[in-house]
Length: 272
Image (tube, rainbow, N blue to C red; front, side):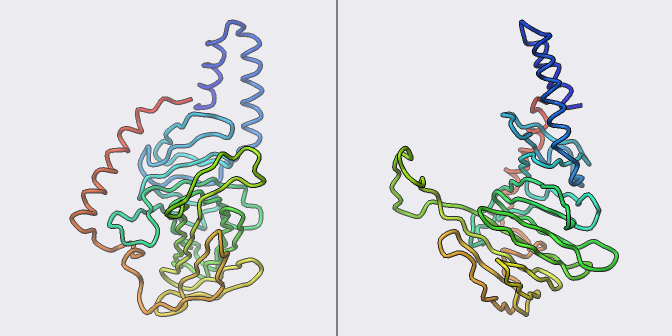
């Protein structure tokens, strides 16, 4: 329906409506062929907004709406969805109290066709938690970010793994025009992978790391300068920033309340 409204808008807003309608239909057909349903939202309307590949506008997704491959999707904290095959539940979270090593208030990602895994996701920024919800057996997630592709195996039902990604310019960075440069400057990206419950395996650049929730080897870090540090870090307990059930401080509650105002505002976004 959303893409059909886009066709009407293009057609009616043109002096040469016939040719514009033909172009719009071709764009719609191309988009429909390229985009497939990859997941289904399990949170209220406007928890996600999506922008189709090649488009300029975002549109809010309805309650239990479909998430499609190729769309850039921005999620409010608490937004959740389930993979197409129902094996992996995903939830977006935020660091309202400023305890995390990375400043995360929103999450953005793109879903890809899951050919040989249960979920294939490209994380642009933010935090996502993956939980194995299969009745039995492991669930596999392919996580892409920057120039990396990691395969994460959630060993059994209930296993939960968090990925948190953020890119920042180092303090004192000087900006230059990119023209004529072999490689334009870019911020430094940092990522942490943390097993919150259960056990998992992470294939990082051909090296498979066995991980388990605290107390155990639970944490792996990566950044775009040094790359992956394959040494697993043992944690005695779950960090306060990572605990999905931790209570917010009064300050954190105020920040969370301010973010909650975004959902009704998103419902007013026009459909493309």
